[in-house]
Amino acid sequence: MKAFVVHHYGPDGLQPADVPTPTVGPRDVLVDIRAASINPLDKMVRDGEFKQLLKYKPPFVLGHDVAGVITEVGPQVREFKVGDEVYSRPRDLLIGTFAEAIAIDADDVALKPASLSFDEAGAVPLVALAAWQALVDVAAVKTGQKVLVHAGAGGLGSTVIQVAKHLGAHVATTASTKDVEKARSLGADQVIDYTSQDFADLLSDYDVVLDSLGGVNLEKSLTVLKPGGLAISVVGPPDPAFAKQLGQPLLAPVMKVLSRKIRKQAKKLDVRYSFLFMKASGAQLKTLAALYDNGTLRPVLDRSFPFAQTVDAMAHVEQGKANGKIVVTR
Image (cartoon, rainbow, N blue to C red; front, side, top):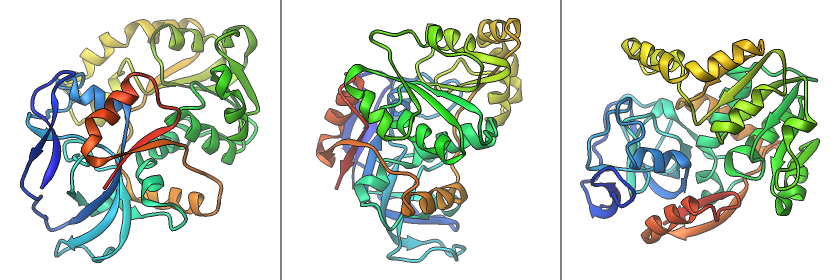
């Protein structure tokens, strides 16, 4: 089958190739891929940024989001059947959605939201799971709490705004001038134009900040939190809890060193810091599908590329041209 494979780590490492059709394990479903989306994580994995933690060995097929149709089920699978339309973010080390087909553990799969097209459904698994896990599992956001979401017009930020509003939070976000109205339309209560305003001068006493930019932006985010507030970053630095999530507790001291500066800053301000690396979950995707189908959530897409132009789609995202999710379709 046709696929886009990381032959070596680096910006030029992703190339088209012919690879064998995946073998279906006892708990797997084989999915004919109709759509897959581009995520910043794809660039990070392609460039080897996680190679010490996620032991991908080139050549491997890239891609973390998928929507498609089941064409085969393993002998132990009872919850899905051939012909089901599904969506998924396959678990780490078993990714590979930039391809014509993929075998996915059934636990990572859910029926596609009926109201969404394949393009729309292929755009949401990773960002929807990240938003849900950050706000529900990690932060336990409650009605009336204040949440700051950075980059509210982007693929992740636009989803976080909607999930936070669903949970009853007051939501502030940052966006460029051209995206201010878009962020408001997603439900943000306060939109800060970062081209002319500094969020740290305008906001205070927030319960949660979700950061997808890192660096100075993350450090400034700590200052808008109330005592005991929580800053969650999806770009790092990784903290010791991440080593436990990976099942590699011996790496905890390394993570402690990597995150020492930001954790020290957080402690000084009497706030908390947490790194989020989302996990695959078919059960949570089922919950999220219901929210898409009842109109609580909606996908935010920029444009679609044909499957043959997957490398171009990656470049479009890397160049900062995307205003929403970029999808590759078959």
